[in-house]
Length: 279
Ligand SMILES: [Zn+2]
Ligand SMILES: [Zn+2]
Image 1 (cartoon, rainbow, N blue to C red):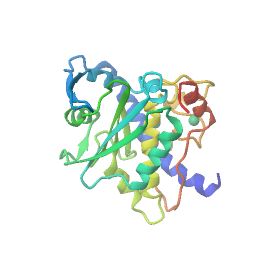
Image 2: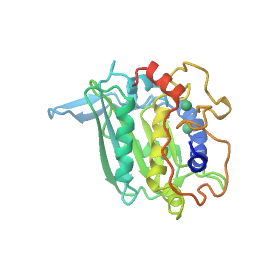
Image 3: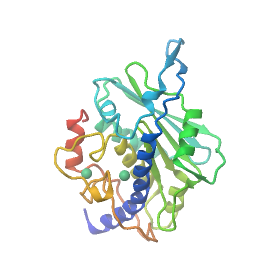
Image 4: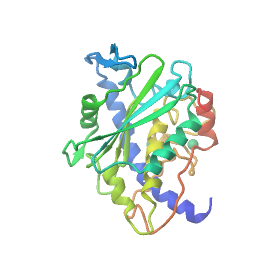
């Protein structure tokens, strides 16, 4: 990786960084409040029959479904229900990148499908993880059913409630099959003339957050070799890896740089994923 690209990547990582620290601490909050009171939901299956499903399977902690997401053993098909607030849709290239990323990593012989759904703004300037859980509970329609595992994602307007002057959160993984992307915040970093493109930023955040759902690092998917950046939680020690966390925070998260590539898992992360049923 040349220096130029690596500088661009550093900027992206700087942004990601902030996101995930908070998300990880939020994950643990969720553990304690795992919803024991969830009512079963009634959904209509592909044959038009109503079926009652246990939504609690989709309300576990981040990383708990890593093997089910990666391997075909329990689920040989996966569906993504991706909501976006009107005006905050990810780019077509971001979705195409994400599909390619999923095809490369997930063993789902019966297929991987994504459905994008537009929604009205919930009308908040900022969202806490609990706000987002409540929104999900309202609008989510896809849950694990038979051999199909379901994932929920939401691209929000507004910002994360725990943003600080030094850190703007771009995404959080907050349940075993749920993540949120702060699209308005991403857009605010992508507009600069020489900064990373919107697609590069979106794709990096999206893939990274989904990486946490895949149990990375050492959080649901066991490590084959030690490469956890323990100081920074569920992240990888390799500084070119998709799952890297950098302690740099800073103003000028996106400097006057152009281009940039979307990072991938490094060899150690890949080995972990493959050992846990992934490709
Ligand atoms: Zn992270
Ligand atoms: Zn890694």
